[in-house]
Amino acid sequence: MKPFDTLCSNLVPIDRDNVDTDAILPKQYMAIITRLGFGDYLFDSWRYREPGAPGQDNARRTPNPDFALNQSAYEGAQIMLARRNFGCGSSREHAVWAIQQYGIRALVAPSFADIFYGNCIRNGLLPVRLPADVVDGLFARLAANPRLQVCIDLEAQQLSVEDGAHVEHHGFGIEERHKATLSQGLDEIDRILAENRAAIEALESRRFAQEHWLRK
Image (cartoon, rainbow, N blue to C red; front, side):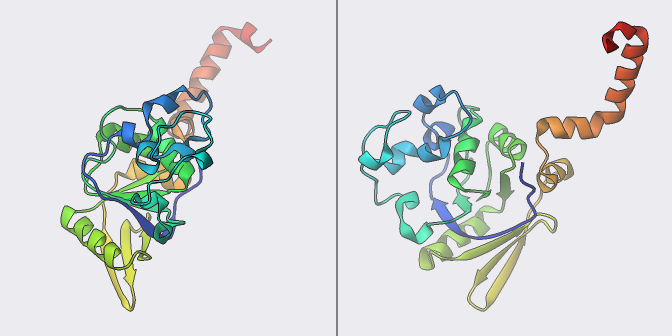
């Protein structure tokens, strides 16, 4: 995974509470057997007027002009601004893959569903929890300035909002183990090996000593 240190970007808003993983990535795309290509179907049923299916050419579908991902004002955003309980519903990890593969590297919301939050950490996507009133303020400022710039510093655990000459800072909490996973770019296997290397090597030594034929 790509290590996360600092990120400065404009925002793309998803202004709804309780956005579930079936909205993030509809169930029909779970039939895709690779781990790639999900970004094309992020928020599929909200982005297009017609129903979609795996392998379908999205260029032949009608975009919903009212949905944020289809609006040029938010083009290139790597930070998604959301409301409370984002990522609820099914535990599908594919929802996180779709967000990442679309180009999003961080999420900002008052709260996330627990399993979804863990899936974000395991896949290198930073979920930032901020108080609801701060998120409300970000939505209001984004409405006034769609190119509002935000910087996230994981080491400092700080989100900074740059609006003209004015800059404000908001701290956020994150467990040290999650912070280390993201900042070092460790996937689940890398993390387990790093935390248990001595025990794993000792076990291998004992087993090879007891069952020497395994070396052949």
